[in-house]
Amino acid sequence: MKILQMPAYFLPCKGGIEYAVYYLSKGLIKLGNEVKVITSKIGYGKSRSRIDNIKVRRTSAFTFLKSPISLTLLPRLFKEKPDVIHLHYPHPFFIDIGAFFARLRGIPYVVHSHGNEISLPGWKNIFAKIYNMIFFNHALNHANAIITNTSKVIPQSKYFKKYKDKIYTIPHGIDLDRFTKKETELKSQLGLDDCKIIMFTGALRQYKGLNYLIDAMKSVVEKVPEARLIIIGKGDMEKELYALVKKLKLEKYVMFQGFIDQEKLLEFYSIADLFVLPSPTIEESFGMVAFEACAMEVPAIVTNGCGVSEIFEREKIDTIVEPRNPEAIASKCIILLNNDKLRKHIGKFARKKMEFYSWDIITKQYQEVYDKVIKWKQ
Figure 1 (cartoon, rainbow, N blue to C red):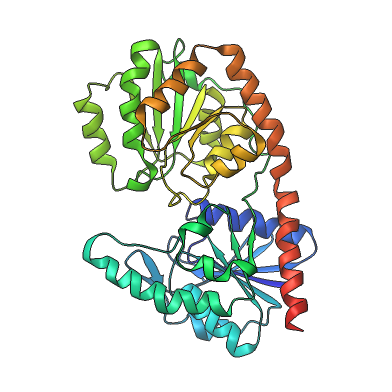
Figure 2: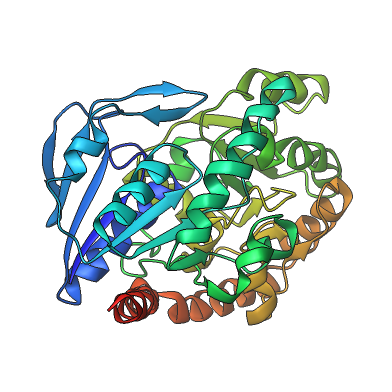
């Protein structure tokens, strides 16, 4: 089967969608498919490349409201003859041009929505509403299948409810071979030998809810003075979060590490005692980092607002807290930091559960959707 993946960004741009497309593509090739990724040149200037046997073709693009716009995308697509096209939302234009091309050529296509419909701050949100009402709704209407990473998003969306009969919920997968504990001297290098480490990694953006986690640290350090919070990532809230740490007089207890590459990130997971994903809403459509922490046997505290909590609920991983609630985050952190036996038990239990979500297993679920839509189209 020839499969065309169309994310607006791809590696070496780093993010949840980019890594999901990467691992999915690798898995599909392993199953005997031919996979090609067409994406924008943003983050990587070459038009052609190959990443672990994945053919990657990139088109020139500029960004508008954080979404790539490529005037050469449609002509580039006419060189392709895939059996199925996999479109990745929430970046407009790539999904719209991909859907237009698919309909023009009679090719079945799947819309993979990594979260709810887009929204924008302030007066700009009128553009988002118009786009969703016309273009996104049109793409969903004509899609042969829709994929979401969690069923939690469906009742919260104005549009998914209309098309629930063709929605398939498939969670992200995890590479268990990659995410395993490593021997490292990092803890000593950071001067944290006698500390208990709480970790966060991700974009420093509003929807991540990091302000709730930082607020929670006030209570945590009162009960567990050796606790330290390590924040890994960059983003537009960085200055605001620094200011909050200073305001709460937590400079001694909160460390900002900036961007960390994947290899170094494994070392940070390896020294962490806890991981916290404080994202309060489904705008955190899944939360791959929580899966990564679990695979590393690090208990991951998540809110019941984010997508990955659906998996935690199903697998009875008892580390879910209320969203927007620093006290709930602090309470769970204090309990686990003060109980080594419980913390280790939850870590090993979560790692065991991740075996059901390896990319080898998850990729087969995507393959089944492709097989169905191709059969229906015939």
